[in-house]
Image (tube, rainbow, N blue to C red; front, side, top):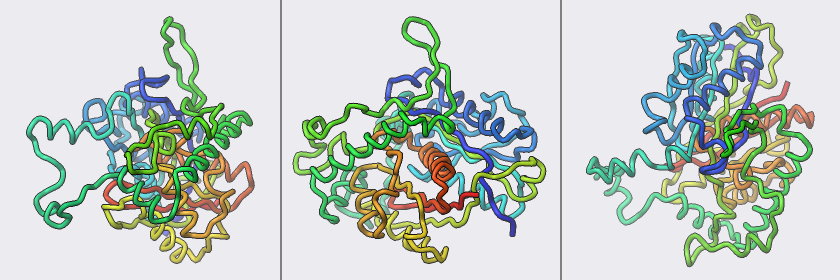
Amino acid sequence: MSEAYIVSAARSAGGKRKGRLAGWHPADLGGAIIRDVIERAGADPALVEDVIMGCVSTGGEQGANIGRNAVLASGLPESIPATTVDRQCGSSQQALHFAAATVKAGLMDMVVAAGVESMTRVPMGLPWTLAAEHGYGKYRSPQIDARYAGTQFSQFGGAEMMAKKYGFSREDMDAFALESHRRAAAATEAGKFKSEITPLSIALPDGSKESHSVDEGIRFDATLEGLASLKLLREDGRITAGTSSQICDGAAALLIANEAGLKRLGATPLARIHHMTMLGHDPIIMLEAPIPATQRALEKSGLKIDDIDHYEVNEAFASVPMAWLKAVGGDAAKLNPNGGAISLGHPLGASGAKLMTTMVSALRASGGRYGLQTMCEGGGMANVTIVERL
């Protein structure tokens, strides 16, 4: 069986809801990043055999196979097919897994794994909430209701359960959120994100144009006092907007190839896909799956947590990476060292590819060997990807 390599990786800088990327149609946004990741590799676009794109809210401007629409919007050859994947927040991480599995099997030699989400233009959950409002039913079937009677599937509820189960106070999570902003601000000021970001042209209110290349959600002046002043999302809870991931517009992409693809490109890869794991877990607490999934991945890969030099654990809520770190016994300094979704934003379907882009870039800068990425996903699931820097 062939190996799967990351040849190039790129992402947009995050845009806040109704912020700097609000004017970009998601097909155009995704298309711009796909085009750039192919150009970064110096690849003939005609060699790309498929695009697999993650997206969560696949309706409206993100409907009708946003992956294919992004290819058509990109100006790339019409010969490049595309499909869209929904594994909730792990959608583009799953796109990476599908792309890697395809090239490892030798069915294709070069595939783009990507993700896009415009949470401004297609608000979170819009397709299924709108359907329910218009009398087209709900996603929970009678059999699901019977199996999970009297329960709700809620990421907010899951975040609170995680905080209580692992013993984190509101103050603990405020401190974690502050560190996320501090790390993201320091990384930005040091230029650590510059090489991974695709600058995008945006129109300003006065009609002039400007390049968007800095993540818009970072609070460079964040303080504990400011975080402590925010209201709780639930009166009896511990989570606030400040300890939750930011709603974000964004896109990211990775070019994946096997040995035959590398030979055709004449390229040196950035990293090798070392291991991939997926796991289902309790859909009520929902956000805990990254813990057993990581434990399984380490066991199957033959690695220990101390062998990993960089962890990217999506900051859906502060309680998730905090619980993960406590359960797996990792080193806090290796966890999201350049900040996470609390500061940089969580563009749902794009986050998997976004985190991988950042992790590969950081491993190359630090000289670290192994990186591990995982994220919680709606329905109580998790993906884990371990890469080796080359």
